[in-house]
Image 1: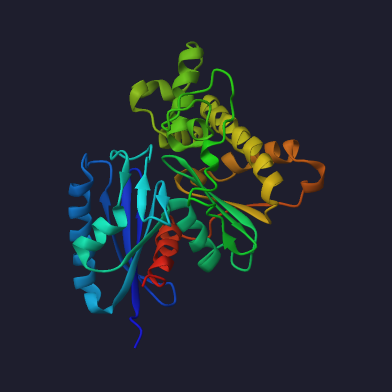
Image 2: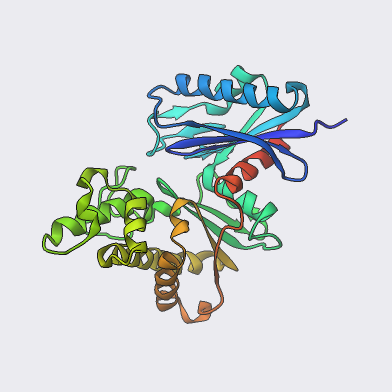
Length: 320
């Protein structure tokens, strides 16, 4: 009889979430650990293994787990490795799937975290029934999962669709974690929003804003969101700038895959209309005429982290 459960792991730049998932896509139990606190991947994997074993013990047995799927930054589906991830402490090429499999004794498959979110959205969320769509994850970085004709786009080496690293500002662009300058991620991720806040505060020393009450190096995107919700003009302007940048990028993304929808997922999407309205306006303004008013902009329909965990878990059913 086929084993009834799989495990999905969403490895984020800040936190990692693990869930045990059944055939219907129900997450039976989940837990999380801090990704960023571990300087060595071996220490991280030891803690991750401990969490996995603990969750299995609380719900089922190891013999009932078919496989593990992991969504990771810069995860290569073909090799099972994390390769040169800018938002993780561990550098170079890490044979993550093999290292985890050696520890837990369950087969492991791996993909890019945004691809995992796209699979989750297609199977259980806003993209059900769609064959052409793009999921944009707005978290520590900007990720993307591109589905064309019902198939996830991997490219010949497993790294197709790094839309967060499309260069938006060719001259005098911000330094990105990838080492280049001007990438979308440097402006429109949660960390990009915090950087914009610091820039605005420096450039406008006389502007009144709640953000001045926070030490500049401690400002987070949540602080900007909280300030904007009280009507703070600078904070609202930061979200407008961020949304306009995303809208410009989306207009270009539409031109190469003509998606039915672009679905926003991740912490920054909690800003709701504050970010969606400027994105929509900017995207429509920059779209080629043949695409205008054809592309839906949507928020993920899955609870935060569920899309990535469910999408990653779908890989667990495929492992040999």
